Image (cartoon, rainbow, N blue to C red; front, side, top):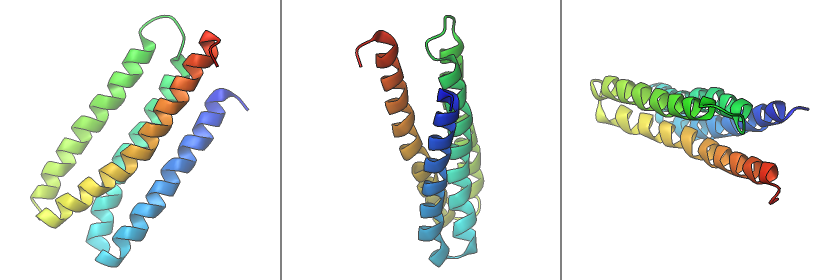
Length: 129
């Protein structure tokens, strides 16, 4: 399997696992809480997987591709999160909290994985493994 394929498999698995955890915590609180929390999770997970794959593909290559991928991921997450948080605030504070919980659960595991993956790749390329 290629390194991009391996990254996609692992990253996707982490995203699915965190989505299952979000659903399990939100489900007892009702359908609306599930929708808002899964929405937050989806923003972070989908953008994270897509831009993470982009970063892996361009990592170590000359040019500004890596910075473009990283910047796109950060800005997409920021603007989507802000827009949906504003929308959630019009429906009630409990939905804002559900949305924020989903954001955190979708972001942290994938971000930790991306940073670890890219750090290890950089070390592998430098020969300092």
